[in-house]
Image (cartoon, rainbow, N blue to C red; front, side):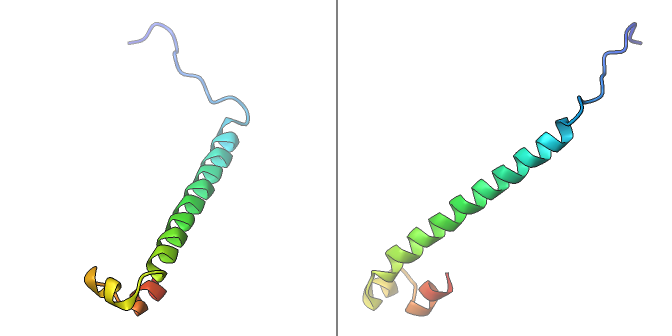
Length: 65
């Protein structure tokens, strides 16, 4: 049994600040993911059909990415 209360409520605005921070982090991660896919799609679209076939892809697969 604790002699003193050692828990405190979060300060005013802390939950809102956390939610805003999480939202901005989610947006940042979505932008990183989008850019990675964009770069990959650009690199694959530069390859010829024979090179795509060598790695097991077709032109339609690149368009679907």
